Length: 60
Image (cartoon, rainbow, N blue to C red):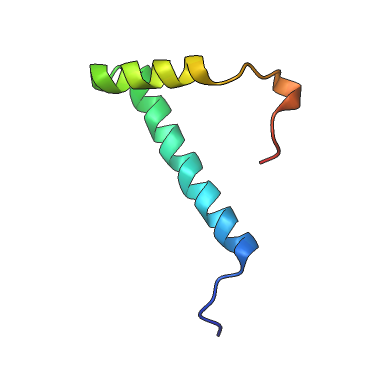
């Protein structure tokens, strides 16, 4: 067995971890469990992101 993880698999694994973390964050945010300073940071980041049409999102 090779000790090296193929690049595609590493990216897939990283995306899965990130997706789970985002889902937890979104659940906590919806329930009002985020600290006010974290909520403020998220709102600032959301305002900075360019507006994207749902059909033009990057492939996952």
